[in-house]
Length: 635
Image 1 (cartoon, helix red, strand yellow):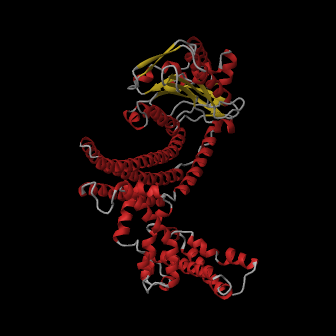
Image 2: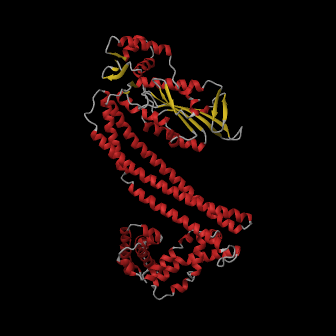
Image 3: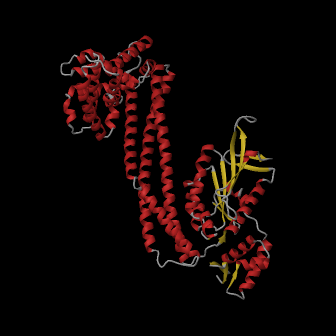
């Protein structure tokens, strides 16, 4: 035997045996999931390196290292062939081994969980009669523990016998040691004496049903995920479509109208149908998830009844078995609940995207058909926001303040606001622009009276909603807040309020007013059912006209509406209206900026006067390029 140099040792360990070790460090399941091309490439590398090994290293290595290396090459190839065999792949590498060798790998690889378990863990899982118990029983009943007898088989290649003994001998010894430790603590496991067979059968049936439910739902989720792949493309098309509508809205504000909306309507219909299709897929999956939940709940109820009986009868072994299965069912139900929540959130998101597309085009169509739009500059929108938030803060700071929680049927008296009880948020901070300010007041109590964390009881929040993109680009806006904007804003607060079990009262103000569809939705009986729970109450505020709208059946918000309602000096508004009508009697239209200058009144007073007159049919507000807001004579 020739001695090897240091360089040759490095070459052998780092290069020649390397692809073999890659395979041997994997289990059968990992190899089976690998790409077939990747496995074929590994096979070819091993074949190539085996030739180098036999030509250059066999006669130069110590005999024990040489035999070990030969067995590694043989077993690595067997693992790759078994992976291909399990996958039913048509490849010649499977034919290099007989059925007995392939089957032996499959059987032994089923027990690889023991490689990562300690002796104590094996004892514990046998005691709990879980999956390990079944494996141990199968191991003993099938006599897999007698590795010597299996490997005496002349049909198994010698190098493979060496490899089997090396790879699985240590595992089998660990299993035997675990069984011996169990017997030392609890007695024999082969004869089931602690429980009646019918109890064991009930547990096994539940376990199988649980696994079937998980697997069937996993396959269904995978199938739906595959069908949802085109969603990204549809979202991109939806963004492009909204940009088209945005350009048309900009042109409408300057008086330019498109000749026809038919191409846009066709595109809208196609996109909304696509979104509806995805929503249906997700809705079906949610229904399937809920069905699986009900199946598990039925099984859970049966086992809970049995658990209570065994507890009363002091049959601890039976009670423990049932409790273990109840824990497994509980874990699966928690997982299903989480998945259902995620699916519902995704479905809601798709509904909002579809609604936004429809809302934008509907508003454009209404303007083309002659419906008036409200024009407001960014500076005036900022003033509306400041006035709305300032009045709200003033009301909330008028202490002492009594705030009632219908959730707990309790009234809280606030004598001061703690530092962390009043929070303010803004979306964007730019000069002479609204910032979408949110002002939030939190009524809270210590968990244990005078100590412990502060628990929310009531949250009262004012939100200013502006189209910041329009204000940034044009300096003004004329779009009413629509349903999709409203829902996307409100749904953010519902889950947190429900989880915290506190009342969240929200007033949302828009300087351009609200689309009638929003007001109609808010006032509908279905709104509370679909979007608002007993923990959330909402009102809409028109910060220019000073109007507040809410669901008439919601008694809670009625008590808070005054906190959000803008306040105007009625006499000043009436005075401006009178002056405007006198001017209109002599002119075709009056200019907003002129009336502000002539009356010396606050801009918000003149805005209210203009739009009050329009609502009364005594004028029509519109925008003229380079002039601004005007009020035409007549309705």
